[in-house]
Each structure stands twice: as structure tokens, then as C-alpha cells.
Length: 434
Image (cartoon, rainbow, N blue to C red; front, side, top):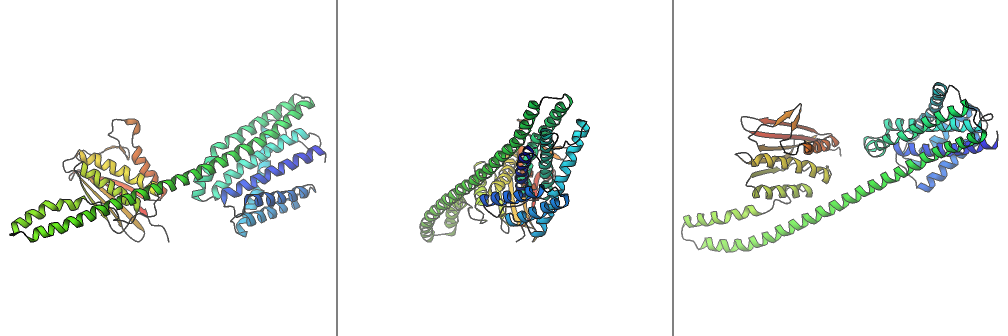
């Protein structure tokens, strides 16, 4: 085996090591530091490179399965059985990628794999095609074994990125055909091999950069969530503090009221006086009724909003508070639904809104929102059609609600009672298993 072939094999084993690490992170979670993972993975693939030089196919396949399984088990949160399973999967993907390459070059380039001894530069192009196929198939297979959460965060974004290796494979197949058909000079073969090398390297760089951007984006989202929680806590304590101050004032005034009542001569005067001070009790915020800060804040917000718009707003939150739903998601659901309810109730005669949250069983929590609505909703297919003047914003609020409901495996339904002129929304959320 000549020197050029050895250099090619070294580089390609480095690429295989990177594909292994990429696949493992898509299906599992690392349980060691980055530096340790790099050292152990590169050591394992250095052993595989040495074993590969013996050219014993059976020994090579067994070694790939065993070493990959050891790396899976020691570096990632995978049990031994799963480690051997995924190691066997990768070995199968590797064999499949070579079969894909043979098919591509035979169908589109009217040729077969070229030997390393006779055509080292064409051999490099063939191997690059094979390894890019290996990488694509690995990501596709990983999508079947990843959890739902990891699919959303780690795998789905990579689907569009697969256009890069796919287009590179097409370029390599065409370039390979041109080199062999037109008897190109050695210099051009060399340049083609260098181009193939950098194409493979560019895939590593691009996907690594994209992985870093995904990680930074996730960290930014976490920071925003922390900031949002801090803002909610701040608002919550401000409202509680304000409520406490109002309560202290009310307690002080109550003493004076009681003394005034005590000095009154007849029951009629007492009743009139009580009627005059009773409305002040309703001015107190409902903060703290559910033990869920964001839920209490939203309820308090809409109580004030309904008072301002002269709407009757009744709240019944006793046996459930949707604590397992993220603050931003709960805000999305309630703000959109209650905004729509207020808009409809304002145009109605009754001007009523009712909000209930309760445990329907040990398995589900139910959210029921009813509002008076004099005009029947417009239905298009199975979806509500907006009555807002800006049609380009058609149904965005309801779509946002449905997206969150789907995220938590909930059920959404609505109905309109034309006789009672009442619109009703029902959402059921499965309780998390403790």
C-alpha cells in the first residue's frame, strides 16, 4: 500500500470517528467531558485503522462493532445491550454506504470502485462519496431512535442541512466521470482529489458550526426563560406587595367603618352604609388563588381588563393549576384565548366570560372557557375563520394555542350554542406521571 493511500485512510478514519460522535450525540447524552471523548474516540479509531491494514474483512467488521460498542457504553448514557445494537447499526450503515456509492458510480458514471493502487486519486473521490453517504444515512437512522424531544431539538434542524452532502455527492460523481472519460492529466487528478478532500472537510466544519449555533441558541432560550421567570417573580411580588398595602389600608378603614356602624341608630342606616362600602372589597386582586405565579398574574390581568371594559368575569380555579406547563406556553394559551373571549364578549349583550380550571380525573386537567357571543363563529372546513380586518393574521392565535396543546399531548375542542349565544372552549391536558 503506497503512502498516498495511507494518508487517505488516516483522514477518512478521522471522518468516521466524527460521524460516530455525531450519531452518538443525536441519539444519546454524553456522560464525559469533550476532551476525554475526543481522546478516547480517536484512540479507538486509531486501533481500527491499524486493524484495517491487515485487510481481513471478518476481523475488521468484528473490531468495528466491538470498539464502537465500548465507546458508546463508556462515553454516552447507553446501556451495554443498546451500545452493541447501535454499534451494529453503524457497521451496517457503513456497508450500505459503500453499496450506495457502487450504485451511484455504476449508474451515473458507468464505472465501478477504482482500486487504491491503480487510481489513488479516483479512489479518494470514491471514498469521499462513500463517507458522505455514510454520514447522510447515519443522520436518517438516528432520527428513528432519538426521543421526541431530541428529534425536535437535535435532529429536525439537520434535515435541511443534508442538502449540502447530497449536492457534494452529485458534484463528486460528475467530476469523477469527467476525469475518467477524458483521460485528464495527472495534475487534474491531483486537484480533483484535493477538492474531494476539502469537500469532506467542509462538511465537518459546516455541521460543527451549525451544532455550535444550535447549542448557543438553546442556551439563549434557557437564559430568556430564566429572565422571563425573574420578571414574573418580580411582577408577582410587586402585585402581592401592593395587595398587602391595600389590605393594611382596608383593615385600618374597617375599624373606622365598624365604629361608625356601631354608633348608627337603626338597621336601615346600617344597610345603606354597608352597601356603600361593599364595592371596595371587589377591588382586591385575586393574586395567589392558584399557587401558580404565571396563572395568578394572567387571571389578575384579565380581571382588571374585564372591569375596565365592564365585562362580568367569573373564575373557578380550585383543583388544578397546570403547574407542569411552561410559563411561556401557559401565557400563549391563556392570553390568546382570553383576548378572543373579551373581543367577542364586548360585542355581545350579556358581556360575560367564565374561566374554569379543574381536575376531571386523576389523569386529566380540564380548562373550560365560556363567553357570550351574539354572532356565530365562521367555520372554514374544521377551523375557525377570523373576523379580524387583517386577514393575513388569520387564525394565528388559535394556531399558537393548538401548537402548545399538541406539545403537551392535550386535546382541544370548541362548540357554539346558538340558542344561549355562548361560545365554549375546552382543553384537556394529561397529568404528568410522578
